[in-house]
Amino acid sequence: MLSKRIIPCLDVRNGRTTKGVKFENNVDIGDPVDMARYYYEEGADELVFYDITASSEGRGIMLEVVAKVAREIFIPFSVGGGLNTLDDMRAVVLAGAEKVSVNSGAVKNPEIIRQGAEAFGNQCVVLGMDVLKVEVTEATPSGYEIVIHGGRVHTGMDAVEWAQRAESLGAGEICLNSIDADGTREGYEINLTRLISTSVGIPVIASGGAGKPEHLVDVLREGCASAALIASMTHFGGYKVKQLKDHLHEQGVKVRMTW
Amino acid sequence: MIAIVDYRAGNLTSVAAAVDKLGFEGKVTSDPADIAAAERVIFPGVGAAESAMANLHEMGLASPLLHAIASGKPFLGICIGFQLLFEYSAEDGGVDCLGALQGRVVRFADDLHEGDEELPLKVPHMGWNHVTFTRSHPVWEGVPTDAEFYFVHSYHPIPIAEDVVGTTTYGIEFASAVARYNLVAFQFHPEKSGRPGLKLLDNFCRWNP
Image (cartoon, rainbow over all chains, first blue to last red):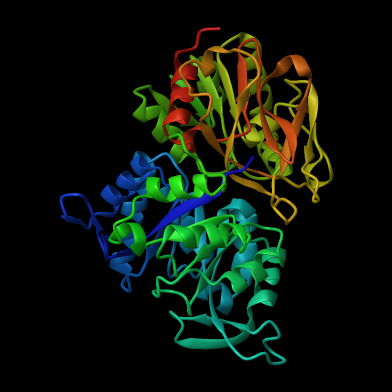
């Protein structure tokens, strides 16, 4: 039986993680390769790197980070942030990432999903979706809208329709981030996660709002998510991946317990 | 030297990195001479069967691979490199494959269910799952029986029973590992399966059938 995945997300700017993991000795580690190794040893099932670099120089540094991570950790990882063209995706794949995550780039040019899937296979292309709860309108019948640029720009696109379109274009997975829940640590947006999970045939990774182990149980069970993204909880929230997995295991959610 | 066969079916960085990490000399290559000279061969890859087979033919690699298998040197197939060893795949409307193993490759049904999950199972089967070691084999040595391995695939082979050495459950029970003489092949990615996966690769790199 397939295990639910726990996926730490690391934000990287100019080759450094923006928020380090607080290890037992309380020293912040800002090297993404060290953090990746830490989470690999801790039992993370997969990793997500999100490049928030603005400059092209920083992009080159990110590719070096990807290449180092690929040589040192032996679990899957994806890279996202600012990937707008097939060449952007190819550079990340050639550096050693299993998956590339497209978000705003796909909203502006949905064909990038098809191009990526044809070039690297569906399993390689993750659609990142930032979603905001809105009023039900003709344009957004689900009551959820796609937003870009960290939630600052509305697109008028319905979240369910976009998820289904991305699947038909060839996306192999969806990473679903609730802008409403993000940063609250009050739990994932269960309704949204469930809505998207039940609307597509591909796996959905829930993101945004994790603060307690119970939140993961909820989103993996009621939200029907295949995986849960975590960040602050384990980066500096005092939780360890193992603790989260122990809790999920006790609650009857199947997770990988041997690594 | 261990030949890691590059036939433009996905990125071989992680396979090469894992072999290197284990202290063996791997060489990512498309050259039939390397495959012939290699002490052992790893045939990895991700992607669709039709384009993968087309690449093998175009690059003149199909018969060098079959020769390597027939030569008796240790040979490891991974993921699409596992599926292509069979006679036929139903992917892309049907593709004739290498035929080194008897059996064909079929898609997971769309209406499979598992445990207390209310939704039908997602296809692809993506993520970590158990492998039951149904028959002893040198590659399993020292690998914890409760270990999980990383899968990502929508199709799975149906081998003959005597070739199966490992099975996995995803709505149905399917063959996730086969072995025949000097050949062993996995549906999952040992190079992406943490320490248990590295142990499997290490076992393969030391195996003398």
